[in-house]
Image (cartoon, rainbow, N blue to C red; front, top):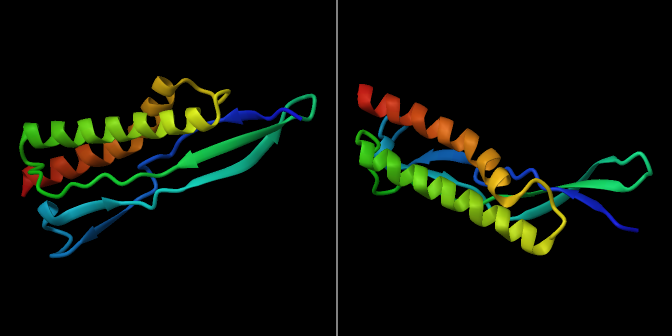
Length: 127
């Protein structure tokens, strides 16, 4: 039986913030996640074919980047976008029929961590 695969990637989204010095020192914050692949049946088509959701997580580190500068924020934006696209391509290499496209998957995957990055950068500039 053929499965329809829905790849809504939450890559680099499911992460926690850890600081070795303290929550106020953004230079020491690292974004961490385990790299894993999980699948979950999230529904069925009208004909009963399972729809599977696949997610993969990657790590994006903020170590050594100054978020109070535009160049630092741009560097992390690039890292997040690169990781999101890599994760989406990894999924589509294993599941060629996965939807949405790699580009759309990466855009969705990067949305939340980019918003969190901009919030952190805003807080870093206010300090």
